[in-house]
Length: 323
Ligand SMILES: [Mg+2]
Image (cartoon, rainbow, N blue to C red; front, top):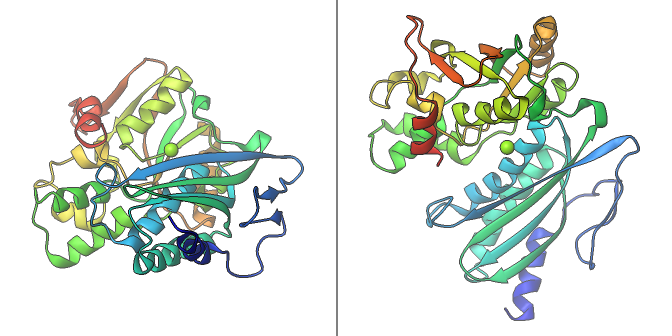
């Protein structure tokens, strides 16, 4: 790319506003220079979105700008971190100014909502690909690792599950949705809201946590594997939106809430003695949560209906939607 194009791109990713006090040097030098607060661990997460692999090539630039940052902030939420900084590597077929305006406005809009400062980046020419690295702070004793679940712990999930999966079915034209429902679930797919406040509220009370990016069964499976435990889910307790409830049978019943990814809710486990504390902490954080099952010593994940039938969807759902 000629220098002028780099200049153009740099213009869109200069941070607006006064910036964070912990940024000694931001965008524009060889490195950013950053201060981590004493007593905190630096939490770091990176994700790449590739056109045609992670999103359709015609996805709106604003949706990509939001989602590329949101999925990284969701990982920070899942470990209980408070977001601070981000870096961005963009590979673009061309320096399309209209695309950059929309992408950067959505990216910076979400960044501003969570006090995140963009502190560096890189641009190259090539097939569209977006890599974001997010950095946050978490007290050493407060980090929500995957390995902390113990038999007897209660399993919870925030928000509602399956809407992003329903949006994918609509995009793939496997299901026709009324316009209002389609808009609502596409919003869930393209504009996920990272559960930062919930992650921070759970620091002192949850035993393990993960964000639901690949589907509840798969992601809970990561907690179970890391913790060396099993679990039973009460499937009919899984929280679903009124939109998904309207299309529940056409969308495959519990397959979406159990198996579809991209919802970016938090799944977490809580020792029974902390149940009241956890529910109060999330209520204070303005985050709905639902108790959905129990951690057990017996390995494996059981997905039971109220009549005792085991749906056995744990593997199938993951392969279809997240694999
Ligand atoms: Mg994650």
